[in-house]
Image (cartoon, rainbow, N blue to C red):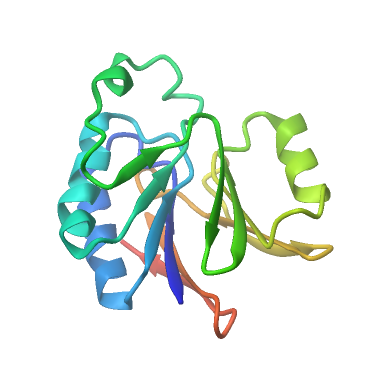
Length: 166
């Protein structure tokens, strides 16, 4: 099973759409957005690709999303689960925590608690893939303000993380 991971799109709809198409080609079963979405139109763009394929999208808010009025009007029927500032998702027996990491205390507690197989996060715009105890910690870089823009695909069967330039 594979999952798609992106973060820090900062409203860049073109990068979001390009990342979505790369992940479809990679055969993902779920998509995770680690915050700093930058507007509801980014999630709508992702949903246009993944909802017809019944691939769920899970997203958390980042520090730039916290004050956006878009979220209270976001449609709930398009395959996107907005999880607030922190999310816990179980996919095929894997426990996944999803957060933006700008709250450093919560971030470190999440990584160090040992309750999750994977912690997915954003904020720094820097690709990161390390293991702390039993928990794999992954930041896919930035899909909207990177040099280059990146996203990732994690294959749970092989443990391979593929970083994709958008």
